[in-house]
Image (cartoon, rainbow, N blue to C red; front, side):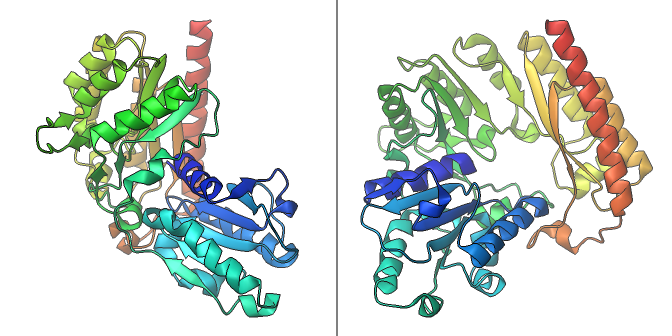
Length: 391
């Protein structure tokens, strides 16, 4: 999702007369597009911003742009995305070098904000610039036009957002608090964006959403309602697409109808990312995931029976509050039994605003690291075996 957001931001700035530069030291504007899902991701951002504060330079920012007409002074530094929504004006206290903060739903305002700051910088000394801070974190629905700038990093592949936010409120997850409740884009706008990408020569598409399975475009006048399966059918019929996929799916909203569509649609890849998070019913309930271990196992069985030669990946959290050795063993055994093609495995870290942030984080750092290593090594061995079988 953040990759596409960065493309959107770059597209907005290019449209406003900025250009992308290859060297950070050449940039007049440096923008960090951030994630708050894991503490580790936030720590990396603060570390990089610290480099700017010290040297006015940074390595590998997500978006770097330069005005066609520039002056030689400190770059304007922006922090946008989930961290912006999470911490708002407190960002300036953490790092005075930052000039503006923007939440995910307000990225359309970035060009205007930069113009305001540029006007200030042309009349002020570097020291006085710190007096002019701007933050926009209204968490409102994004304007549709931001998705139609035609900016894509890849020459063959395009990410297309079909929904924003999430209404599941898993107890560990910060997404509803930083990206808002679920909002589905109109299917006609989605089709239009895909057709624009195809016209630019991009023939591979990935549909994006925090929970794509919950997608539903409400009827407008004579337009019919379109659910996720119907959307997949419409996308499959677009001329010029070679292949397309989607991420991410929530097990609670995943159905056999989706699997049948995956099996039947010739351009849709046979790939499903289905986060399980835990193999313990006790922990799944504490996570507010809305399903059980048994339900997940049955779902996977249906998927593999219906979608032949399919790929299955997942997300797993170890060390969630209340997870004892028996709970962890349930997760370990689930990974062993299902044999995912690959998995993203994380050590639990509390996230601000979430329900789980009020839980006692009672699994020690040492146990988290041990459990993480055990599942990671198990999954590595499974992935290696499956690759050998394919060869």
